[in-house]
Length: 193
Length: 265
Image (cartoon, rainbow over all chains, first blue to last red; front, side):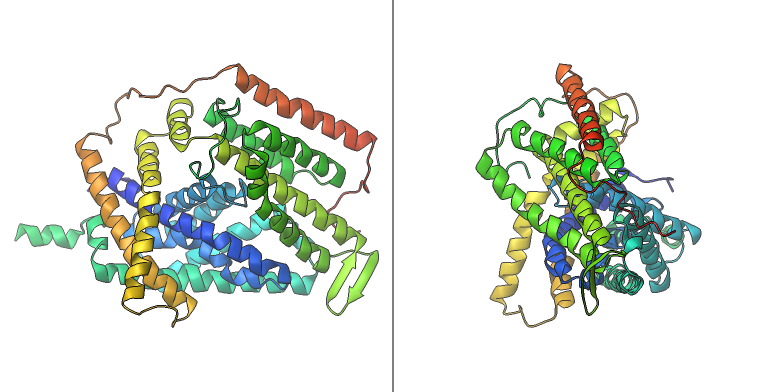
């Protein structure tokens, strides 16, 4: 088995992410539309932005895929002229790194809902760090900040955890994942017989 | 993307894409370290001027593109204005508490979001994605397998959008629409779209590998991207005008000139 990402892995990851990038671009105005209510209802759908990482990882199951997927999705969104401008690139990078780190901690061996939700929380933490620094969210009054963080965590687990896993399961059922997953040891043994 | 609106070819288009990206990243890092409202407003004006006069689009197009910005400005600033910490209370109603500090901080955040949005748009409007990736390969040594994958994927965007329309229409013909909640609806669209995209990406990747796109030997490039005098002008524009904005904001502040962060002492 070859180490690292092959061109196939890279291209498939990027294409999945660009598809999510289009989704993010459609998502952006919706996010801003619910935002002015002030009670952070927008944060419930924030988790959508971390989805590319976990979905791509669940499909390809290789190291580095989650990070690449977040970067690709954010640059796709950026090149299409996102209303968030450049910050999407940096947020994408940080969110991807944090998700990747969680997956790395489990040696890229587990693909269950628990780990994926942990990766979602990783991305969520990454985005919160950026917000503390850029959006001064630490200067919100305490009850409001708590609401903000709790809503974002719920949104992350809902979209990046649960929803991503269900999408990946549905994609497995269509059979496309067999194209891109590296052949396992069991497959090689089956050939030897 | 760029095909939506076509503008004139200006000097901003001729700037080396890698340099443009790095400059904009630098400006981003500078902007998140600005904590004084006067300087933030000055900074936004410098960027806005370039956006209006430098991108080569007609005022009508620019106006249309800027409409979402108003929204970005309002929604970014509103929650900080309404719920931010502060001592000098101006207005209080139930949970809403507007203080002088939170008002200034909110406006500051609005200008910050606005300048990020415009910076991003300046880049997106004046850069061809293909040239960006050629430049990243040549100037920043991005491995070709990443760059060509990105370019191939960007080419797939119109096909994906077309496919999206087909799926919607097909589902409408069969009478499945509107009945379910949002998540179910997204899933019903995402699965066929993603599975088709993965299949297509796989086919393209196999043919690219067959043509040795993966090899690590030294490549030659169809487009050679270099530097020109405009790159220098671009850098000078920001250095000089932002420096000027900094000096003016310190010597002639027209708005309350305090640190917008909440400092509890």
